[in-house]
Length: 269
Ligand SMILES: Cc1cc2nc3c(=O)[nH]c(=O)nc-3n(C[C@H](O)[C@H](O)[C@H](O)COP(=O)(O)OP(=O)(O)OC[C@H]3O[C@@H](n4cnc5c(N)ncnc54)[C@H](O)[C@@H]3O)c2cc1C
Image (cartoon, rainbow, N blue to C red; front, side, top):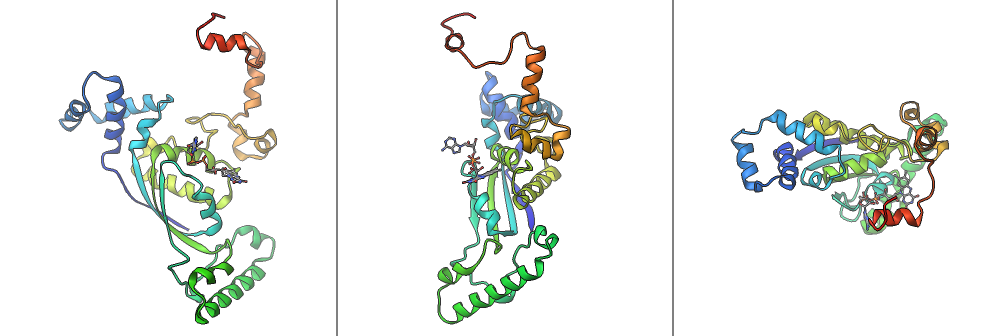
């Protein structure tokens, strides 16, 4: 697998600053940008302001920071999962209709679990047979869009992806969690590493959902949390409820209609 950050929209931190600042300032966005360009607002001030805003739930400005990635040699098994993300991300994927793969170029993704199980040899024998049949089908005039029916989930594919920072955070929440499948987890970890090289200030926030900059706790099942290597350093939600019950002024309980009224400001509790 190869993951490369091809590009990102220019002046991402400044864009984030100006987007957030527009919401909280009497100045127009053009006036804010004049100050940024005239360096009346220093780099440190921009970083500090963004760091404070990122602690809040005001997330829509994060959609104004955009990344482009080149991703290659991932499996179709991964791609089925990746393309389920539908907001703030745009994909172009290598076609099995327009691309006729050369028999000897079909290098299937081999999960390590097959090698550990001592079945890598049989896996490779089967994929070699599939490649040979695929090549015979093409040679016999079967169109590529039909020949591909024999290709397995292990077949390799490539992506050109555009994704904004808000969606990248969400993808990391889900796919850096050990509940996600290993290959997509590895790919997302590489995407994070690429962003970290150029924008460490915001890459900091790219964490699994239990990370200290995200939800901070695990909302998966207690059983999964117990198995997770991060479970040693991140709490499970049930632990938080137990603590609330121990030290909170009241016990955790279901919301009553009275509390809904309080939310609607009809009644003071
Ligand atoms: C561990 C794991 C196991 C999974 N297992 C399965 C499985 O067994 N079967 C299966 O089919 N899928 C499975 N999925 C995929 C999952 O159901 C989602 O399709 C995938 O995580 C991407 O969906 P998203 O809602 O996060 O999309 P995104 O596009 O990444 O969503 C971005 C944000 O927008 C919100 N959003 C997106 N669309 C809408 C909408 N129409 N209305 C309101 N809010 C919206 C999302 O809730 C999210 O907050 C699994 C995912 C994970 C991480």
